[in-house]
Length: 211
Image 1 (tube, one colour):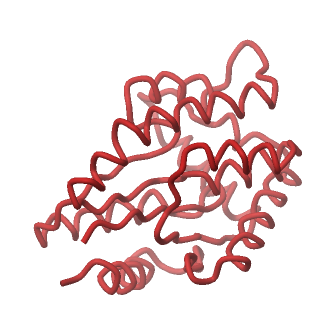
Image 2: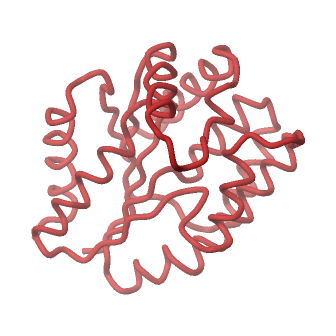
């Protein structure tokens, strides 16, 4: 059955590794699926991703940042996510609307009602969401270590270089959202081992989509 599943969490929480492992397992079981990410997922989204995640020689106003994320999302939903769901595919998405509320709402301090309204315009909500939770200092260290290990690709570290207080606000907002919607969220302890987390993720995923 089609299911729209998002993977959310602060920097360095391990969600990207886990979405890859889940997709590999879906592939082995021949379950139709799509793996995608935000910002990104489309040619337009990829261009916007470079603007938003790579450090630039110019600053980006928080409201401009918000609308760039939303522009990428509109394209993403209409050209990738909705078509996949119509084809009865499972969609695994690395970040979605919850990230905007956490990063631009709590992190940047933008009006959450404006963000909520913009998110509603997309008219699509995840069926289930994994929230990978990790202490801020540990997550940032992991993220920066990962960046240092890369040599070829540009460093997507614009958000990683924000102050720890910014990231603490992001984490707190994620946890508040999960508490408000327990039927949608599964909170994952991001400090556990990769294989242990994968088995936990797969158990939930299979219960939602398994036949």
